Image (tube, rainbow, N blue to C red; front, side, top):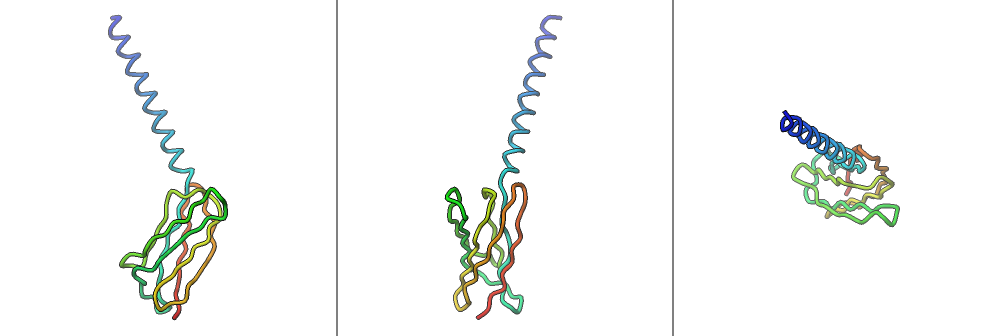
Length: 116
C-alpha cells in the first residue's frame, strides 16, 4: 500500500512538472512575433530571389535578410515585438522600404508590388 501511494505521488509530480514546462514553452513561443508577405510585380507575378531585409528601430533588434522563394514569398519569425523597416531590393526594380509593427504572438503581413 505504501509503495502504491509513493508511485502515485511521483507520477503526479512528474505530470505537474511536464505541465509547467509545456506552459512555459507556450508562453515563450507567444512573446515573439513575425513578418511575412509576398513580393510581386505590378502585374501580380512573383519576384523570385528578391532580397528582403528587416531592420529594427531599437538597438535590441538585429538586421536580418532573406531571399524570396519561387512564389515570391518571404518570412521572418522569432522577432522581438516593436517597429521594423522592411526593404525589398530586386534586380531591375525600384527599391521599396516600408514600416511595420510586430506584436507578440502575431504575424504582420506585408506585401510588396515592385515597379521597374
